[in-house]
Length: 216
Image 1 (cartoon, rainbow, N blue to C red):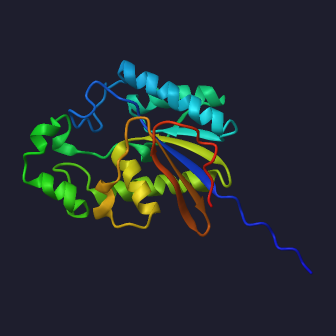
Image 2: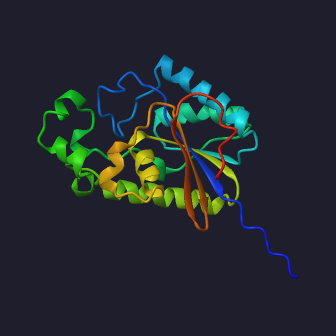
């Protein structure tokens, strides 16, 4: 009786949001240059690096958005794994256009803010990207990483909205539901990508061991 070939191992993507910055929760920084991690954010990145290295010491690669806050978060993770972080522009923050640098408390008073929260699939930031374009870009980037690292573990350091969009797509949920996902600074979300589709293993993990992450 012929033996069946073992199914291919899934590629595990560990999505890591960058650490806290001086403007986290206050301003919509977008793609503006010059925003670095706060002291607390640096400590968060070191803690995330220790968690990932303890659970996945043989991770194959670390990728990050080109912005300073993601590169500074990726650096200790790559160091802990004995790797060098590579920049993938597909992981960059959403382009908030004219809203870049605006205070969140002011934006929350705009009538458009309800659309951002309740009907994001129909919203485009003035002078910037739509949520649908952001999700397509992020999912395409994930597809490239999966194709480049079959059966391996990869760390992807990005931003809250792109990670939320990737997790939402992996869950098979409509984009209008992605605002229901919370992605905290330096949280880890894990998705296993196989030929039969993705499996979401954890979302917004900020403490504890990661060794038990595996499809059930």
